[in-house]
Length: 66
Image 1 (cartoon, rainbow, N blue to C red):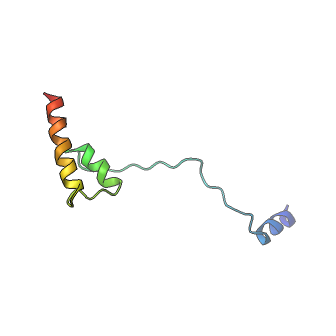
Image 2: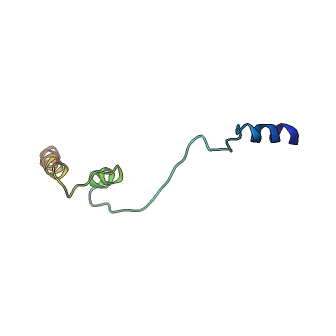
């Protein structure tokens, strides 16, 4: 078995034992889940045009809530 492992290491065929799936959890603000999710995906809600688009979507959300 060691010989086979050495051969695979020499051929750079060893890739480790990565998990099939990874899951992370964390704590954040519950004020606006949409804003939190967008920030988590890299959206900068302080800069244009993202700021304006998010402001417009909040208006639509408020209309749907009433």
